[in-house]
Amino acid sequence: MYRLFHVPLSPFCRKVRLVLAEKKLEVELVEERYWEKDSDFMRRNPAGKVPVLKTDLGHMSESTAICEYLEEIHPEIPLMPSLPEHRYEVRRLVGWFDDKFFNEVTSKLLYERVNKKMMGQGYPESGAVKSGARAIKFHLDYMAWLLDQRRWLAGDQMTLADFAAAAHLSSLDYISDVDWRRSETVKDWYAKIKSRPAFRSILADQVPGFPPPAHYSDLDF
Amino acid sequence: MYRLFHVPLSPFCRKVRLVLAEKKLEVELVEERYWEKDSDFMRRNPAGKVPVLKTDLGHMSESTAICEYLEEIHPEIPLMPSLPEHRYEVRRLVGWFDDKFFNEVTSKLLYERVNKKMMGQGYPESGAVKSGARAIKFHLDYMAWLLDQRRWLAGDQMTLADFAAAAHLSSLDYISDVDWRRSETVKDWYAKIKSRPAFRSILADQVPGFPPPAHYSDLDF
Image (cartoon, rainbow over all chains, first blue to last red):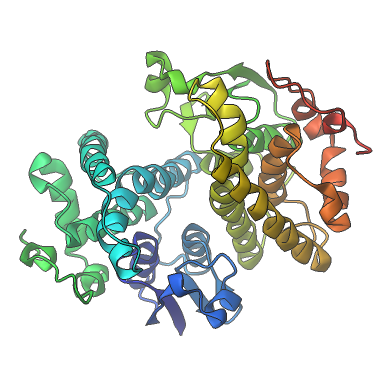
């Protein structure tokens, strides 16, 4: 069985949790206060961040490297297409969400509002929050543009790209920072993902001091 | 033939250039002042960054997605091992350099000293430069620790991980920000990479206003 060191609202951890659950792989979740840089944790992962997946081979870090590994050794329920150009598009979008979306949106909203408080680093910086709230609109529009041409973000099958995007959006939805009225197309896509059994553990997350809004776990939001 | 829109000192562009060159794929290099967000460029790549690789299929962005694609369609000279656990280690280290090393070192030294000036964004912030100069020591030590156990960074064969690392270090070496005396092991590794034919175009780079030091292109540095 796998063991995953994680924090509940981290989009990078959620992406790995979604992949494990979609592939029906059993995992024990262990919450990790990684910012305290506990020496056991640093030994498991010198990068000092989550997720860290414990496997028979040792401790693995870097969420995308973990997901590609899980895809390679458990290919039965595929989350990557088979053609190189389609695989490219999945990886481009995973990069888009984990780099661009993260820097422009997630780090500006979730990290300012939640992580800072949890880590005892003070109050949200209002300029950052405003900039994140502006940027998410552009990203939702970009997703709507993609989804007008495709069933799923990277093509006609559900892939890692959808999980990367849903991981960020679900974490932001936990703090009511996604305006689902902006695009019916994006809302329909999220409703499809949200209703998958793989999403259940994420919808059950509870962070002390930050109760989720009622619509967060509602499949008919 | 491929066409690559790039800037000479960008480690992400250098990584793609190294992969193309090592695989003996012809490429036309086009310098792109991406920060001016020229409308033609933004159409080619809505993320507004380099590298962008023009192929028969269109314009590709996200350096790691591009490299994985090139590896899949041109596998003759392999830059990825075949076992999933070895491929994981390559991807972990590519993530390490392109995310952690980039944020802690490259963005603090190269971006402060060079990009800001080129983009007309003012002077380097001395706190950032100091923090980058401190962090690179930890990273060189980590590389030395890996290379004490392995011929190359991710194992016994040269991979994308070595190119990702060499791309960052060569860009920093262009501005004399790598102290090669810190580790004989790392220096030997860099000397091996630097002497490959694939590295020639990178050693010939010249950025107006920033002449490279003599040791930059010297194979016996």
